[in-house]
Image 1 (tube, rainbow, N blue to C red):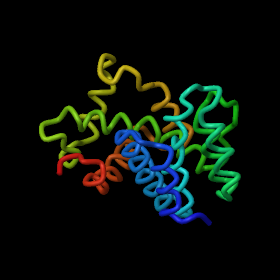
Image 2: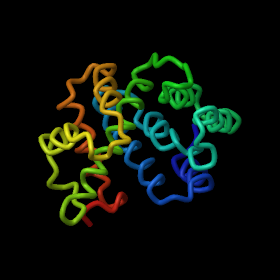
Image 3: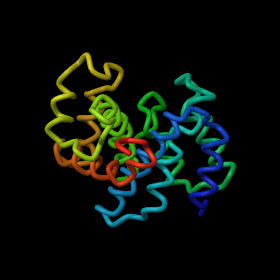
Image 4: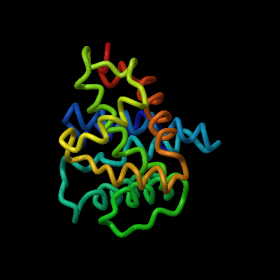
Length: 186
């Protein structure tokens, strides 16, 4: 198994943007939370979250991302289930989400980014005082974070088999646990 430090080194080699790095950390935290919830391997699930977009800065075109990154991860010995989840997190690849890890990664990706966006417009850029109702309110505001697919957020929760409010709560609590790394309210 690849160590978290090895994964971070690769992430930082390919990803210069502080925001993309923070997104990786946010999705990693959400994936770890779901691994604990479902009694799964937290290191594997965290690895999928951490590395899911590591190639995006170099290859943002849908024809390339996440397929080029997945090929690199395969070459470097990343677990096959982690690589599959990364391929499956983007609908345009045509890779079906089969495992619980696949479904969790898809579900956590957009929602993590959305919750961070909500926290960034709060006084003090604080995630600590943020609640599910505030996130739901912002989801209804189509002008807010307009590039975030509300349909994908809802479909992700449904595929995972978790009610949307509960899904928001799980991801929100995970992000609160890494607020310092995300620079949210510190």
